[in-house]
Length: 474
Image 1 (tube, rainbow, N blue to C red):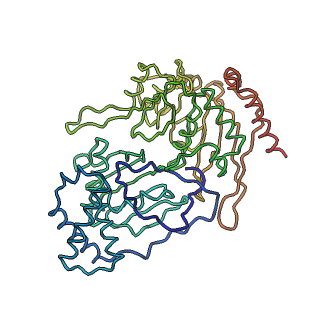
Image 2 (cartoon, one colour):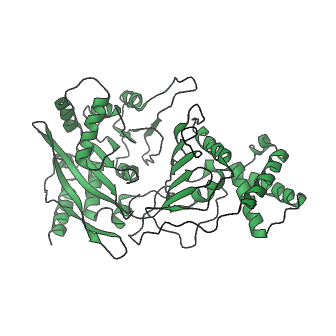
Image 3 (cartoon, one colour):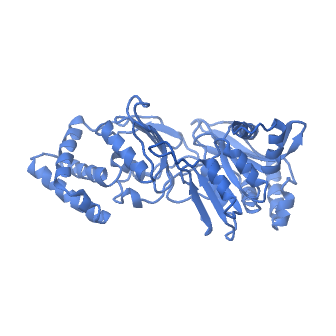
């Protein structure tokens, strides 16, 4: 999610014929810094008559097909069958449409029946980071860090709500008037949030954080300027030598992407357990156990919160515990795991700086009750967290790793930290893109040096630190 999105030269690709349950994963694309796109409204908005025609043909299709038999067919055959029936209905009803518009209508109806309707063209594009649906008539996307209004619209709020229910039902969740807020995911891991009426006044609001088809690596982040080669090398060492790591950043800054990248350097013989509200991490190790929280059922019981998952992890013989996002009292249990033999555990949280991340951890632990004194909580943080990595989304839409910070210890009641790398903004160019550089703070022997030596990585760490200092002080 670092860098800027690349825009395809041939425009948006045609909707994929692959249904939602087999669509490959999608997420974030990076590209070199380039001029940010202007927020525009597409002029190719379809007329109301198109949607009226589509509604008529769709209703006739539902009367003509056996949905139970359709569900038993493979996706390609089902799409072909629907296309044939829709063509017959168009002929029988004497609907006059240009060939191109008829093909588009058939494709839209197939997407409605087999996929996620008007969302399918957007889900097929790999340059989109976020899809934001504000009721039936307004759909926005984020491309290259900027929000744009699209020409996508739904037949009405009922169709949009049906699609929202289809998305959340496939992962065992529900959204309706009784439970109008839902966090879910697509089967590829893309994060989904739905808030429905009566809370959403203008119709259901659907937000999808998409994942890339090809997963990013630290080497790609280096290529696109999110971090220097030397900084990337240090991050690889941090992941390899089992430093307890917190990744902080704002919404859309690329925390989950960076966490995925760091986990690539976990040894293949380690047992890793992940805990998430909506499973979106994409670890490549062979020994991974994925756990996901559960919301309450219709009776309001049966919820399994994050804190229970982390507690259960400790009984599963983990070597590393990875928490997708720390939001509340589970911070206490994660820190407990970090300082009781589960070195190399990682998690993300929302914060605008490493110092703020420490304050957020303390506040979340306090939220859990227990009456622990502030100093005791800070001592726990210091003994648990080794490194804080700060990811930021800058105002030009680019993503950068702005801090690599060590937690050193406690002086009085103040947690002492030490920055290894910082991102320094130097100005902006004529196109409004920010110019900056990553600089080394001159630390030649970080606190995790002994840990690096234990894993045989001290020479590699020394070389990366020396090279970064040479570049920062030419």
